[in-house]
Image (cartoon, one colour):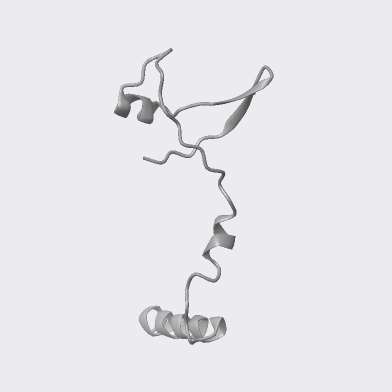
Amino acid sequence: MAVEVKTKKWGNSIGIIIPSKTVERFGIKPEEKIVVEISKKENVLGELFGTMKSKKTAKQMVDEVRKELESKWMK
């Protein structure tokens, strides 16, 4: 299970806070040893660009959506 957390300065180290819902779900207790998998969150939008392949331009897609919305909501 992936959980997004924010790092905090703790003395000379960096610590994380595990959200209470995750603590409850896994029954984590203080001083208990757990395994944490770390991966740095990158720019989500940057990751998305280039993943969708389409033969239409962005303008063509926007025009189609606008036309559909106008036909449904602008009667």
